[in-house]
Length: 361
Image (cartoon, rainbow, N blue to C red; front, side, top):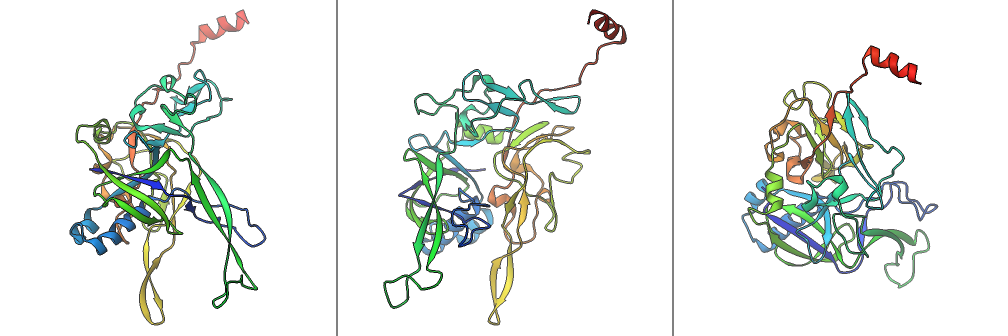
């Protein structure tokens, strides 16, 4: 199980990956931008730090390290971190603006189809609250739900000449998609191992952050929630890659998961790059990032035919793609929590009732 919260507080700007279609002609584009850094980034930092400081056995760390995230929290209360809201919950701006998807006769329905969600994150301590009971932020103070606490800030940087403090004559500028987080917020990850407290370079552009490790109390509400077994319905709080090494699927192709297509509330898949391949550089073997995959996004809700009666840690390894690089469980892939979904057959009026209703009309 996860034993620590890894809390990351930026000491300035952070780096968000550049857009997929960024070019000199499109300096403000952010197509494909990615933030916050995923669990693999923090996992790599922990492994690299251990090689320098040796705070634990490296082989044991490499074998058993598992990191999940990213989440975020108020700096003063990192233990009550925010996770993606299940897509079955629609939370509007006002306290009376809420709705929930229900599964009626194998079809998703809700009462207020015109209501748009205003909040994308929910505090972990309010996970089992009813949607109608979730408290909205009051005068800037967070309660049970919140909005993304960061914004992208494209910044142009110069490429200097090697021998002069002048910009290169050609291709002299590059764009950094910097990210500004709110001063009272921080990033939070779950981890099986702690990272020594200190300042580290974190992310693609090696920006300085302050990292602290906070132990999880065994009987805390977080640990109890993570140990709760999943029944028929659950929601992802991190992206999930199901299937084989060569094929991404929307759900595990396993009779233990479902002997028929599960009901899903989801969004379009998102890119996921995780595999470590092998390449050759100047006749030398070298590790490189291999072909990417697609992941089911966080917040996706599943309803299966039979209760799983499993925690995430008990999911069979064959549900995840494996055999190349580190197992996906070590990156917190598909971490999920149980949710309550209203499931009922749709009751059709009897023939005599239909005739009576038609006559009244």
